[in-house]
Image (cartoon, rainbow, N blue to C red; front, side, top):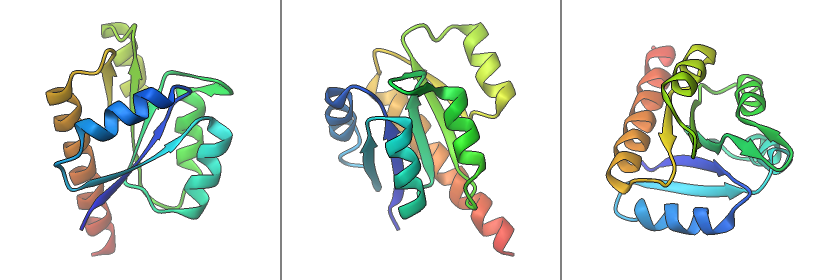
Length: 130
């Protein structure tokens, strides 16, 4: 079964680059340009992980955390930011994010973190179902 990722970013070229990085993994990725567009996609589709840029055209990563909490599904949120330092990482994890990825994206790290987040999300759903 393929896990589904929603990538939220105001930069469509990042979505194309990310799709290329994930091509050999059992992951399917959708793209939303804005928080508003992401809300619509989350209502229409089932995702396992949301990968979001920290700054969005109509919000930020904290808004994404709030949006995901409205979902009936357990979703992991991963935040990406060019200024991803230890302080930002600690803040993101304390507020409920699964992890933080620094930009520019480093393919082995992206693949590892997204694959692990999808596996964790699937395990959480199976545990709740039991």
